[in-house]
Length: 157
Image 1 (tube, one colour):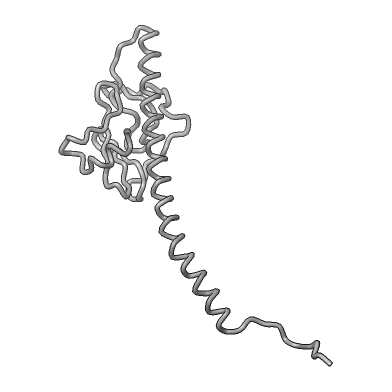
Image 2 (cartoon, rainbow, N blue to C red; image 1 turned 90 degrees about the vertical axis):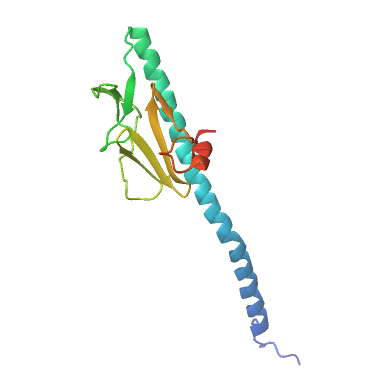
């Protein structure tokens, strides 16, 4: 007569092998996930730069159609980085740059801040600095104020 009450369980060796395989998979997956997060932050900043540039171009076209030729000096201030358009003389136009402006959080990583006419993106790329020059949102990697030309290229190309 066969014993029908045998315990069916995993042996210790089988459990160790499963744990080793899970460890190998985790060691491969975790670096890839962190790289994906970095890529997402860069893509988010790249999309925002494109949005700002499009908003500036549209505002410039609206002004030309109305017969106004004032130069846009800034897009926001220290409390609201991409809030309203400002004339070159510092006058607030009251027209929103973005539908949902980004509040300034200068002490956090991966954030935009505004200081003295310069818009700084702090990220793993380093500090990437943009300015509104002749009504255009520009990042010039040759300027001495820009600490990271690689970041400039990644956010504008």
